[in-house]
Length: 326
Length: 279
Image (cartoon, rainbow over all chains, first blue to last red; front, side):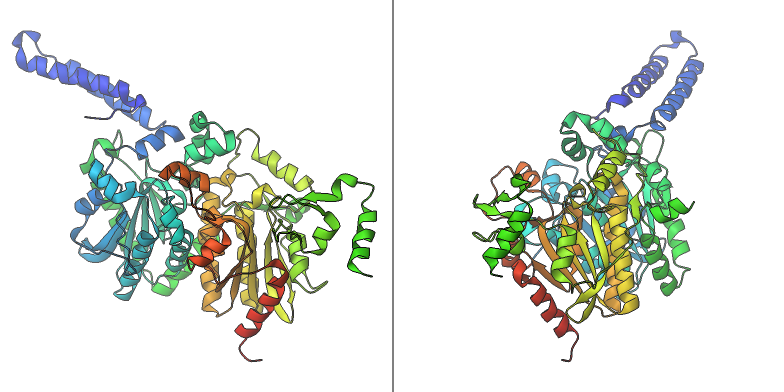
């Protein structure tokens, strides 16, 4: 069954209207020529989609980003890359089912591709732990990154996670250390790294595979230090303040571009990637190819210098001595 | 002067504010003379409960007298997201600065620990729960860069609930920024010692706090990535006794030592001296 978000209702109503008119015109000749009517409705539909999807607030974007029918990491891996050869395990006793990864080809070039996999069916969701990674997932990711560095393959990471898994096991195995170590390793890994937030960018659990030369976000993805729910319950002590919390957190692609945290917004098909996987895949493939071709021309030492500089400059603050001089 | 005389003289100094002369221990509930508590490194003399230490008191407890030069104390948050929950972030910052602890949740500077030059960063928990925003990230990064320039060691005394929500994604990015700076420090073969005190959680624990060449923790300190309440709600079962304490982490091989506050300075001197190589 198709899941319809609150703000998509109008769109679906018009789409149904069009469908009915089309089938009517097929069934009865007496309806006459209604192509004009249908055309008008289609125009209306397009305008409506444009209007709704270019004005989504933070919470609505969060809902789109989490939509169960949105393309997941494996959809993009299958659609964009060829010859995907999956690699498993952290080599320290952990399997790491929440982050998938392996070598594959992108436009003829061998690359390492990895990402959080949320799972589509109930069974897969459970197996993938809903994309909530544990230390073994992060250590597996780190192993694959070192592997890529050894053979000089560029890395593409796809982020789509509610956050790192909050569990007893995860803490016992050093969730914090696993995330922290990845940040450190990625900061100076000697191959190009392209990061794409494809859905939910949930805090440290997302950032743990999110340090790169280029960081992109899909148009309707979100990336935040805490979920709107978490923020609302801590700062407002009320769960129903999620709408305010989502806006306050500035978690949309547009917000992050303005804050210089990301380099590029990747457009989604009209109405969102969840309504048109094929088109979403084409658009992301184009963006990835563009960034990869650019990064491959930069010498490694220059690349590392630029990456260090990029993260060195993250943050906004003031200096009161300078302000008083002004 | 015997210790009891010292206590008496200190007690007489604050007799005008009698409510501050006594403190109840949070763990054993014993009533302690605040002067006695202070003498004892803010550790309960009865049960060894480690009270939280202010950043200034921490620096004083570790560095040689008058050796500390503070840096970057003029950096302040600018509320770039114009964040407002029940209160404006701007007002929270203003109130914290007014209460006189510091301009943000960390104090950083250069000093001597024994004969070793160190860059010391000490969190101030009373400033918005020691949370990390752009200012904290920048001050730590600058401290690491100074250490590289002066070929000295870095010590961070963590005491923080994690990333500061009011600075959104910019807070999260401080994790990457500081980890990247520490990577550089490591490339210069300079040591970084991380000290975990109560609490060290969230984005702080998942970045520089767990990246020390040596990681020490104070007894009983809460240390972890996810909050205990969040874990309980997720897994829907009670957490084991002592979960996410310093001792729990030690047990699981995540830190080098649990060190009593009284012995911390001595331990740091020993480590720094050993790391220097020759005697």
